[in-house]
Image (cartoon, rainbow, N blue to C red; front, side):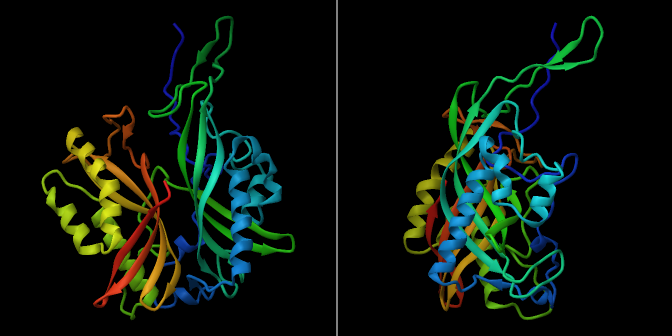
Length: 362
C-alpha cells in the first residue's frame, strides 16, 4: 500500500518571507524594546504626514510589489520590486518566494483593497533602518487554486516508496478556486529606481503574537506619547470587542457598547453576531489577537487606523485552538482561519478613544 502523509503546510493567505530551514525574519520595529528612547532609534514617526503625491507613489509601489510577490506565477519577477535584505535573501535562494508555498495550491493576488502607511524613519538607525523608509500594511484578495501534486519518491531499490501530499483543512480541491484574504506588512525603502520592498511578512502567521511597538505599546515609567495612548486604547477595545466566552456571553455585548460609538456598533454586530452564533453551536470560545496594527492618520481628536486580527476558536479549558467544522461547511479555527483585515476610525470621547467606524477589508 502506498504510504501517505498529511500535508502540514496550512493554506497560505499570502507569501511569507521564510529562510529555508529557519524562522521568518523579525521586522526591525518588532526588535525594538518599548523603552524611554525607542523613538529616537530612527526618528520613528507614527502616522507620517505625506503629501497626496507621496502617498499615491508609495501606494502604487506597494500594490505592484504585493501583486508580484503574492502570486505564484509572478514571484520570479522579484528583482523589479525587492531591495536590501529581501533582495539579498532572494538572490541567495534562502527564501521560498521563487517557488510555490504549497504543493497542493497556487496563489494569485486578484485585488489590493487597502494600503496604509503606518510609520516612517526620519533618520538612519540600527537593524539596517534607513532615513525615509516606511512601514505599510496592505490588505487584498487572493485566488487560491487547488492542484494535484505529484507523489514524492522516497527511498530507492527495486520497490521505491512514494509519499503523497494532501490539502490542509479548508484548502481547495484540485481544480477548485476559492478566494482568501491577503494581509501583509511591508518595509519600503526609497531607491534611485523608486520604492522597493526590503522586508515582507504575511499575516496571519502560525505563531502570531500580539505586537508591542508597532501595535500595542508596553507601558513604562515615562509619559506615553499621544499616538501610544491611541494605539493602546484602540487595541484594548478591539481585543475585548472581538472575543466571546461561552460562560460569559453578555460580556461581548457590554464591551461593544463600551468601546464602540456611532455606526461602528451596527457594523460590528452585523459581522460578529454570526461568528458568536457559530461559536455557541460548536461550543467554543473565540479569542482575538492583533497580528498587526498601525495608525494611518491622526489629527487632534480623530484618527484612522488599520488592523489585522486573528480570531481563534478555543474549547473551554484548552490552550490549543481547534480546527472545527462550521455550519456552512467551512472551518472555524485554527489561528488565522478567522483572520480579519479592517480600517477603523476612532474619536476621542470624554478623554478616551472610542471606535466610531469599522470598514471590513475581508
